[in-house]
Length: 237
Image (cartoon, rainbow, N blue to C red; front, side, top):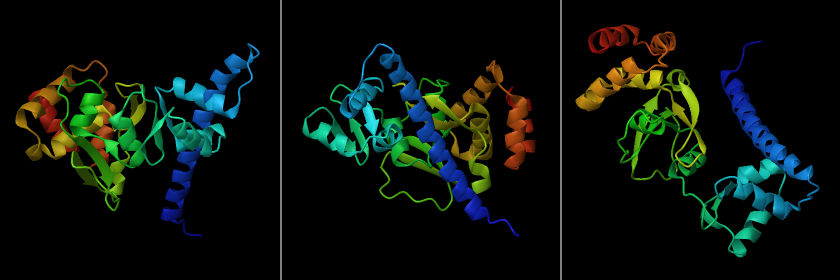
């Protein structure tokens, strides 16, 4: 029987979502067990408040689902003034950290931070980006894209290589492209990259103690740019 690639992809997406929920639930219940050993029994509201306190003042509908708590509790906390709605599905306490990178990717989970945004999030540049650089597979559509957005569309087979997870400056995890993937993107689209930034980034990679040339060449092969990568490295590194 012929394999259906679309069905396979849908199943993979469902598995990722399930893995995320399981991870969030496991992390919290490990924390909760620490309190339980001290004889503390928490109500659903207390569980939610405890989670928010330990999550930089942020809570989402997905977090509630992972904790097994109905989202009506978020509505109640909002009415009490304990949290306010940042946007659909995302809530924050008045003293919580407004994490624009985390909120953006929660809203658009297919968007991977790339190029300058990825450099910034991994602390490979001191330059604060004026906009979000994100890469998405062709065919994906933003409902209401923000103005400070630079979208890079790629074929689906070029979307996956190099995806990794890092904490933002607020401590929340987001998905970005690693340094090797950034190098590939810079070389492929060299004419669109500021020349000073291009040279500085490639030389930084050359001096990067954790650089992985095997991984770089693997990505470059998948993205049909291996020869360009080798030629560029020979000149700049």
